[in-house]
Image 1: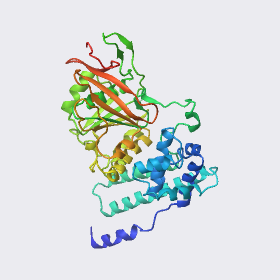
Image 2: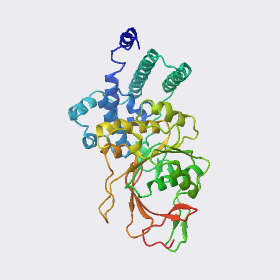
Image 3: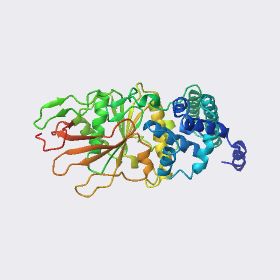
Image 4: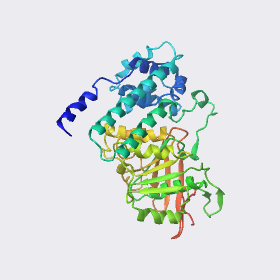
Length: 428
């Protein structure tokens, strides 16, 4: 780039703060604190990313998590969840939460305030995208047609966002939680929730990939998952109901030569597609610049019904330190954007080996990884019983945690999972 152009770019990209309205953001959060049911109106219009202040994003995300867990949003639960995430002091402490509560007399105007927040966020996105486009234009890209196509796609997505409401998966109506009248939608009944994020954790070598492929094959085919048998092999039930959806298995851990034989043994249906790192282009890391907008959101947008995306494994899909809450939070936020667009996301994650005879109690890495997910599963190998596992759910925002006792069964030509009830020596 010439010196004249280098001097010109900063002049084009104004250092002025982008449009925002702190008072409107405070009014939204204060209204939810004042009247919890107001969050049902907010979630229809705004997402955490729409807030200009980072502290407001953190508070709103904590409120969403409490609502999804059917817990009240008050001065006990909200500070507690923020404290667990080491965020209470970052948002200004209890004094700032008190300020939010005193900002509004009632929640009657929350839709108006959400509208302001949303419109400012659209302008922020437009300014940020326009700045990137200007910078790239000054760099004089070689392929002008590709650059124009990319630019058109960016502006089109912003335009669509401006004419639609929030794509955040809707919260259960808080007034219906108590009587159980509002049931969650499941892609696999009680196991994988629709348009939300599921984390599957196990030590290396604990058949995570086999199980994730099984999830995907059941979903792509619509066949019931985990048919149940008694200890002598007598069928007890057809299994868990499955909502048929297209599946894309994104694998930066295993090569095609590993995946394809497994898929053949499990009976790969038409609606199942795999994309491994040995294919070119390889599936991009979720935190790579433009990865979500250029690759993943278009995959979701062109699919009806919305797809299930399975990521194998988490550590291969980002470049950050997994032990850092600060660094992993934006990574997990990128996955949340996929859910906000309507995709069901399943993430495989390595865990450390527990002491012999003990079960896995905690996943590896930063706490924000588990906190960002809606359902968390841990896979324990049962000592002394071949191919038998306990699939435990220590966290389930949509229902009670449970444990499935499952077995990988089959032969050199066919493999599948079954539900064997309480683990004991299984005859097959």
